[in-house]
Length: 289
Image (cartoon, rainbow, N blue to C red):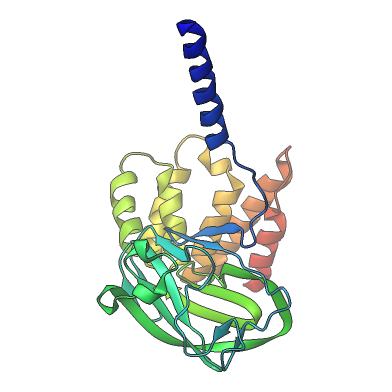
């Protein structure tokens, strides 16, 4: 009898535990999202929750709007929006250290306030906002969209050709706000060049390409390329010969640049796997001379 009672009790406990753990999963009205990319050598990500308009009036003056002008907002739904930077950055002219920050905003008719907040535990409870934990506050122009955006969307947009700047880009309903930011990587790259070109000759080409792209010492770049090409069969690498031709052209040595570009074309045409576009690249370079 005692054994039967014990087994019955255990079965009740097991059933109760299963019921506590079992939950019905349904779609969330504001699903979570994350956008991430690398700008320069900086990993940038924005984690957020995405509310939808659903026929409501979102931004405007007065209490009839979901998010009235002049009222601090969590810039998303649920626990708010988090910006993560792997290195220091300059956001709208303000230096911001690497780390994670809450994004808060105060909408306005023509301008929005953009705030970074150091205490992630605030979440979406902006009523407990503590000004001492505000990292930056900037006023940014808002643009009206011709086509409505139903679901709140963040992007990391407009990455520059130099890979040194981009925008934190917010869009929802009929509003677009872009917050510019900049990153630096030159010191880190230069330190790596100093260290790694001594370890592997293959890094000489990477270093030379960086010097060429960023308008640094072209004589040094050419020296590195020549050192690399002198090793083994490296001189058959038509893609790196093209880089040498580019460096020579930028130095003003058109005659030598044309000669190297023609050699690159010759080798590219012989390559059994194709020229990978280098015949045209070299010809374009020659034509530009």
